Length: 137
Length: 137
Length: 137
Image (tube, rainbow over all chains, first blue to last red; front, side, top):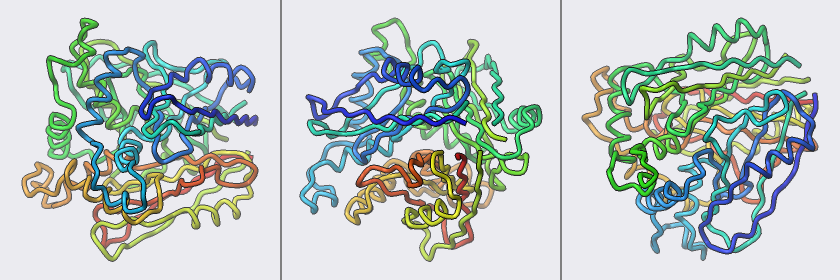
């Protein structure tokens, strides 16, 4: 069995931003030389997410508007007693989930035609990491 | 290490429909002859989900009613500028997640007594695929 | 390839409770002697979740308040025709997801500095199980 681990670092310019990861993940898979296996893509922070969906800008606007409704920025989260102001970012991480598992088949990411992997930064403008770990053969 | 991959194809009669996958997954596991490992069950589309919950029709009604509240069908999603009308289906895929990992122990799906795996179609009446990939020994 | 499986049992004192799993998971990993791999942590019930977030009590209050809004306790869920009263617990399990995959690197859980794993009990005061399964080398 082979294993291959890389860490991606992002410091987004905006507080909230989507980063399209698929090309980066394809390059990591090429370095891993795994034909059949699983690739875990997981945010290493509790105020970020990783998800699979469409790379379509209108949809991305809808996702942000939707998160503003379901996990709104608010002043009065209890978490803010710690001095933080990112309670919404924690809830958003729970909502979209912080990780995905991508199947690897015949040496390629086995995604559907419209599936792309995104890192969702909910509290950016600081260095954040994503782990990419492949297990297979 | 063994790997085994199959693709399921569904074309649901209704736009929104739940498909109970567990018996199909058990048959795939039997063909894979894996005793210990992981089975990834992942929708290959961005308007569908895969989740684990109860096979109880009242609960399924509750899930649809809940999705109608949290990710409603609306005319005015930005995504609809592309000509699509399925913005809600994308958000529902994010909400329930598009995949699950099922543990395999002693040659069987290691699910709890009430756990069943469902494919959740949010934009059906067309051919959609689900990948089932098992890695183990 | 090595595999290692353990089952955790919890009977929480309260109906709704978070259990911090990370120390228990570290002990399981030590017994598994896996250096590189994946650890699946998955609730075996449909009224519980497993998630990764911060071990901060204010945030935990926020999470419960948020779940009360997004998946409220209600008398009139269709699921309650079965005699149950835990419709909200099923929806909460879908919302926060019932499982996480934790990467294992150099013999340790490869979590970010603030990431902790929690079992989220949404319908407790009875015996519930969590499966922990490690595959690796």
